[in-house]
Image 1: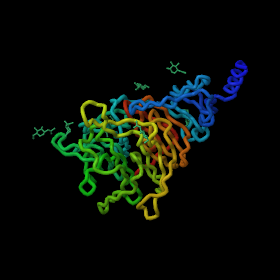
Image 2: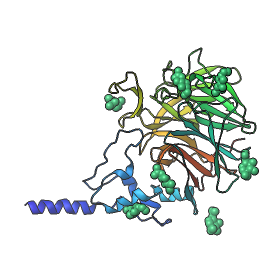
Image 3: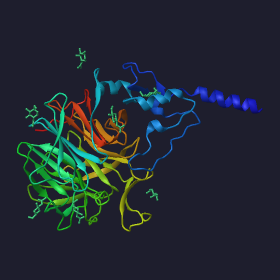
Image 4: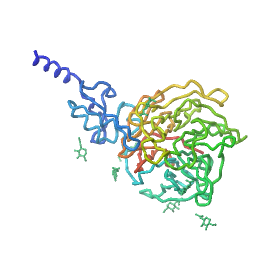
Length: 409
Ligand SMILES: *[C@@H]1O[C@H](CO)[C@@H](O)[C@H](O)[C@H]1NC(C)=O
Ligand SMILES: *[C@@H]1O[C@H](CO)[C@@H](O)[C@H](O)[C@H]1NC(C)=O
Ligand SMILES: *[C@@H]1O[C@H](CO)[C@@H](O)[C@H](O)[C@H]1NC(C)=O
Ligand SMILES: *[C@@H]1O[C@H](CO)[C@@H](O)[C@H](O)[C@H]1NC(C)=O
Ligand SMILES: *[C@@H]1O[C@H](CO)[C@@H](O)[C@H](O)[C@H]1NC(C)=O
Ligand SMILES: *[C@@H]1O[C@H](CO)[C@@H](O)[C@H](O)[C@H]1NC(C)=O
Ligand SMILES: *[C@@H]1O[C@H](CO)[C@@H](O)[C@H](O)[C@H]1NC(C)=O
């Protein structure tokens, strides 16, 4: 009887096909094709949740003892869910290069400046006032740092429009290098290095952590304001406002709230036609005061796998002023969706833990680029916007592929 039971368990296990299948268009250990989104695993499997902001669990950390082929997933750069459509994104000659080692701090706000052929990105650390700049005219690209005049403190999101970089800056400090910084929106002219403040308050309140922005066809700037910069010590001020998403009109100076249901509104991007707004909620990265740390009131960031970690879509109202019909599109495979960009064809690219996901407009993943560092934010770059740059904790990587970003004017 016992033997029979053992036999039937075994035959059930062997009846479950491997979650890994042969790719038809790609070969080599960097490509792994997945069977039916890995939705059916053998009965014995486990993904151990690691509630750590710097090293959360990853999909390849799932243990599936009776499916040895699953081990290939850990070594792959490209994890392919839908080979037909992934091949259109990757093209025949896709490359992934880990280009620069950077500090373990968060690196953010990647943005391509076509007028200087540079990629700017930031480092979120206390008192750090420079930005990193990659010169794409050099092969291989070279990395340096530049300080804006006056400096811009800890930007986490950026867009390029009409010769200027618009930064969403998270930093706040009353006396940093003799100057005062507040979270807000700033511009930088990459040709001159000169900056300007666009927005720095809401009726006198400091913003908490202006994190990311996008610009609509009317030139209005939609931005997210969550609450993490106090917790990573780039802002000396405690939050004064609820976490929310706003619309700022440079023509009038008016700032209006558009959404306050996200726990931690973070990445923000419009669809190419401007009719849909996408937002990520990194609520699972919990800002907290840790009572167990002996010195009182020490703010920390934690990761809580059961909290909000999804990407949402909204319809933009006909008057272009508000958003409605919030719907969850995608829950992150790892960690939470952070930086978010739309490709020219409408596909979404979002940084989630140790990788970057490419989703169709319904939120179905086509492929995942796996990184050996926590990917925080992404930007399309290059004259044809056909490179994807990935920045995060400890690394900067570049993908050359067939997917094009939005080419700003
Ligand atoms: C993964 O790559 C490492 C380093 O190249 C290698 O030692 C290991 O055998 C590989 N694992 C698998 C399952 O291929
Ligand atoms: C891919 O590389 C091959 C060989 O270098 C080249 O002939 C082909 O044009 C490339 N295809 C694309 C789409 O770049
Ligand atoms: C990029 O590097 C090239 C070659 O070193 C140099 O001529 C160019 O001025 C650099 N670009 C910027 C914006 O500094
Ligand atoms: C402002 O930043 C400086 C430099 O990092 C730091 O020494 C100082 O403590 C900050 N101010 C406050 C009030 O925390
Ligand atoms: C701050 O101001 C003092 C006095 O004017 C000056 O000595 C010091 O160099 C300034 N520090 C910075 C970082 O500008
Ligand atoms: C994690 O998040 C869930 C959902 O918000 C909450 O119920 C739970 O208390 C959180 N756990 C910790 C340890 O903060
Ligand atoms: C990631 O891989 C690159 C080489 O591909 C290596 O230089 C870098 O140290 C690795 N980073 C981590 C955090 O393992």
